[in-house]
Length: 271
Image 1 (cartoon, helix red, strand yellow):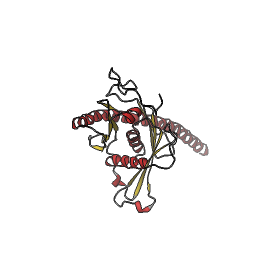
Image 2: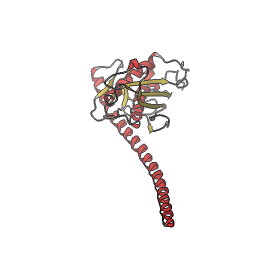
Image 3: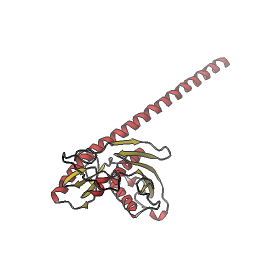
Image 4: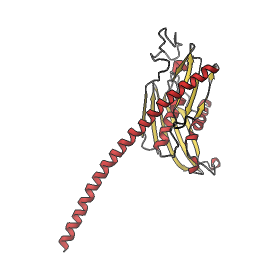
């Protein structure tokens, strides 16, 4: 089915969505940490067919200097979509939507960070959407949160995010592209993993009060699930890192013991 063609239905008579999911079921999520060696911290996310990379640099000196904040670091988020990330080629120049989402992501992440530890510095978060298939702003927050942790930026907690939408009178968790385009609206949200404090709550479309309350409840349940995936991704990355560093240390220790032994032998010969 062409992405430009409106589907005949978003929910079939059996109550399943266009991709076969239940209304409360998320797309498959794959999170990886440390995917870009040049960055101070990085992460990737595959959420359904959406694929995003996030890279963090800093804390470092801020340029231009007029953006400097005396009592904390400046969190600078840059969200961009690759020209080939959507069916109709996107213009390379930053769009108004990209600038808006960059600000939304920064505001969602700030409450989780100890930016006051780095006054007058900047923490740069660069987010690149490689393939867009719905839910990119929330997927970007999930990846950026992991990249910040990977960079060693002091954090109170990770920040999971998800969108809950509406189609044909039913609430749906984690919208795909067709549901996003042709549904009745969505509610993107993010929260602090430890406290559940909401750091992002937007609404597009019309929701009754009861629907909004139910959507938020579904979103919180989904975000708790994503939080566990984020934790597992960090554990997996650092378990591998410690194992590799341990191997390197063992090799170094073997060389050190050999060198010391040779020095001792040389000393005995001198005697």
